[in-house]
Image (cartoon, rainbow, N blue to C red; front, top):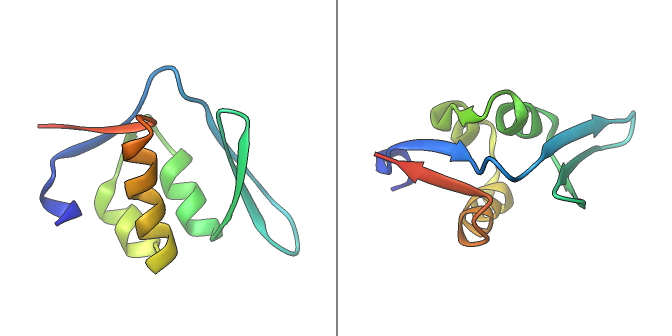
Length: 80
């Protein structure tokens, strides 16, 4: 279903970054931090227009749910 939604973009006012340590990867979005997989964080932060196929490919079930939460919060949006 996500793959058919169109082009995924980060909201221009939202800031995405990540930091990888030897123990985990922390994703930072608008001052909040989330522990996610390294490849998922890279796919989400790489560009403002997100490669949805790459993001889905790297995501586990919790991270797929997290994509929906980010959408519901307005931090990412679909453009057709």
